[in-house]
Length: 345
Image 1 (cartoon, rainbow, N blue to C red):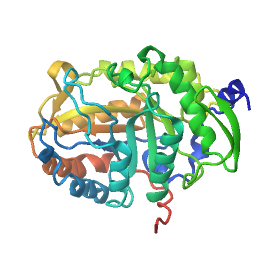
Image 2: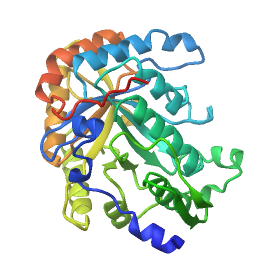
Image 3: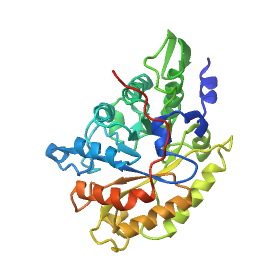
């Protein structure tokens, strides 16, 4: 298959294509909004002790019924960004968490498709999907840290084009049987990648623009994760709704594709504490009533899943999770769907 044919034939898939995918179905449905939690639960400030006990809290998140846990992909810590992400390699860590959980979807937010070769991405992703019984949902991105690209021997300005090539290559590797195709990223002749995903495919959710047009995202992504705009008032969700509508009008088959957004949250003990931006709007401090109002506004805007990061919270992580589980999650329950497949490896 020629490269141009390869790129044009592998479009994003609609809801029906993932009807048997346990992770996707737990997170997404055409109506309703679900909740996920971003890791780490405590902010890393140079001491790995901040992450001690996190796996047990992730097991708690699973038992409490949240839809997903999210891990970030930050290969190299840059002091200029001041953020090491969730520290652990995302694929190794998700495999570890797969063994500590039963139902929660395992999501990347986001795997940097422009930095790694698609064979390595596909091998790691399909392995985690199999080990977890079909719970992997992949947020993907082209990368926003310029210093990482020369470290990989790549050009930062070419990351958008490389993402397009990597997505096509990745999806081709997921197809059954021996493969024979060429790509700018490599050539495969009569070889097959194993294992295959538990249910035949892994959802690829594009983050932000990732160097692509809105039309490309509508045609090639299995969903879209965007920043939420402002969250301390109703104007931000209204602007977010316009963005989501513009995207969905471009989806070729008119089928459902999920939209996700996220917020870094400092949940106040005072349930009535007003929605107040902090750290230049990077963090939202609010009581649970303000959070419920924001989630309702997001749901009305067309958001299908909200990923909350609590590492900037002034309260202990377990305490915040308990309040979210008891007071917020019942209003935005995870969707029923097929249970994870048996994973007796």
